[in-house]
Amino acid sequence: MTEVYFHCSDDHHVLLDQSGGAAMDLGEAREHAERLIRSYLMAPGGEDWRSWVLHVTDDLGDELFDVPFASVLSLH
Image (cartoon, rainbow, N blue to C red; front, side, top):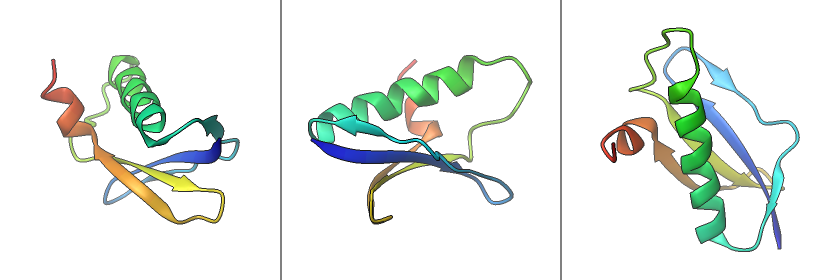
C-alpha cells in the first residue's frame, strides 16, 4: 500500500491535496485520479478544466505520473 497525493494545476493555479490517500498500486491510483478529474469536470462553476493536469505524487513528493484533464474529457 502506498500513500499518494492528487495535486492539480494549470498555468495560473495549483490545488494541493493535503490529506492524500492509500492506493494498493499505480492502477488503483490512476483510477482514483480519473474519478477525481471527473468530479472536477462535473462540478458547477464554469471553470475551463481543459488545460489542467492532475499530478499524482508519493509521500516524499516524487511525481509518480500525471493525467491531463483533457485526456479524461476525450473519454466521454
